[in-house]
Length: 166
Image 1 (cartoon, rainbow, N blue to C red):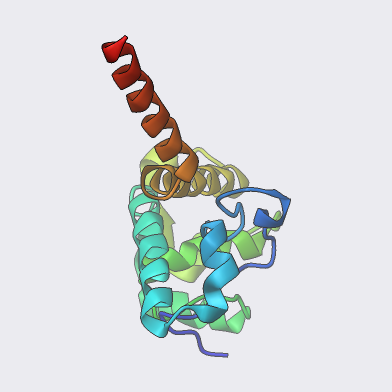
Image 2: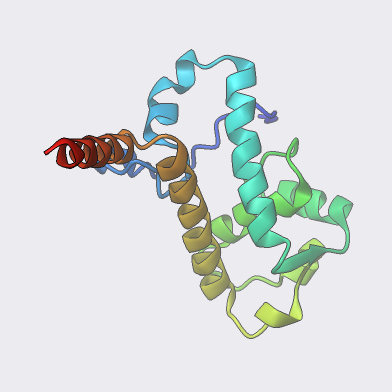
């Protein structure tokens, strides 16, 4: 199945069912996952664009793509699930997820690990990337969507006003 910019980024390991605000799998917010079927194509594309931007930010400092045509060809050859409508650098996220603990030479895919990260194993890199993606997604969520944070601020301001009048 060919994916597009509004395809679901779900990877089948949703942690929002356990109460997480941000899924540890796809890094979407719980309300995005719950309402995905109700979202318009444009709304889905906005979510994917945010995730693409986060992945690009993280992956460009660790990898370079020497041959994007070879990369796409190899991803298809090995039946690795990826969204070809997104920037090729983001496919590295899917490649590392799919490789699991197997031996993998990313150079065979037209991908190079940049020198600053070449001493890490692919498993260590994958874990680092996942951690950074989750941190970016959680920071974005708590900055823009966390109702508890806003309620806390409202309480603090209310308390400060109350103390001013006493």
